[in-house]
Image (cartoon, rainbow, N blue to C red; front, top):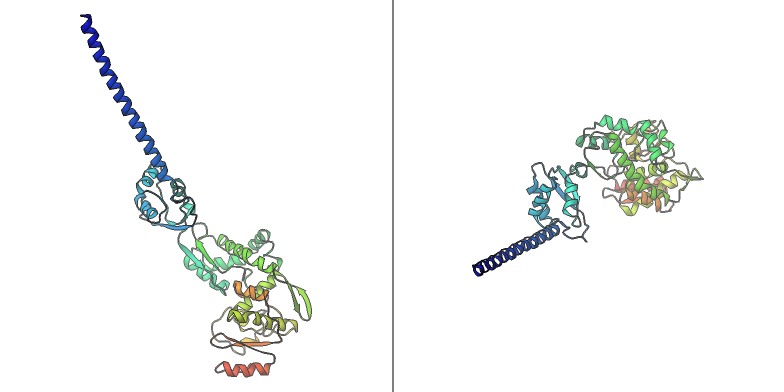
Length: 377
């Protein structure tokens, strides 16, 4: 009997050992699979290319859910696996995507990408406003009104808001000066709104102050260094005068409206400098147009005689302030003025400039290159 019990006991031990070994194998297998799954999951959520930081624009549209977003990201090569992106999004509860355009690069992990795409302030609406070289405040205000909830009147009012100007003086002391307090200025920030493309979003589509400040900031960033690299001394009325940044921008704005081929701009700037030196009126038609509130009809002899401070046919020296938003090339022309004896210039229909030292020479060139030319004398 004891032998039978012993045999039975040994059989049970062997069976239990087999079961225990099988259980251990199963547990080990699950652990290995778990480790592989976790490793794979971790790998699939890491950056697609940690060394590629080139920004890629991703647009999220109104109807996009997690699957559509994953598809867009995969097409751009920004994620390694769409299924893992969707799973990670669900587990992290980051699945509320906002409409807009986002800047993402391949060095970002899935976590970082989700953080951007689910943060409303990170997206751009895709609506932009383009201020081009030579635009004036009136044109800019009209463009703003077309793509924002800011009316032309609101924009222009803010451009002339003295309290706002005073705050800008504190924020941008190298750019915004007391010369903007001049009562003769038609628009205080004319010429100070930098020509560039600006994104319109929830932060600025209703607030002209935010939008204008960004334009002034761009001018501060781009124009102040150019001004600082200028000699800053002009001969005005036979006296060397240290110019201000306001004078610099004003002259650049006049040059902008008279500019032709880039190769001629330095010489045209030289004509204006020669006239300033002998206190001769600049006699530039764009200043007359500006004095007439940018009227679009052809200028008459009577228009050239109007007594507005901006009319450079009846006033010597610079206009009270800029008449447009100057381009970089106009500032560069002022930094590279071509010295010569010319006092006159004109341009033909192709934009080529012709220069003269006397009015008689100027008239001869005008009759030759400008069809229907009529002397203003």
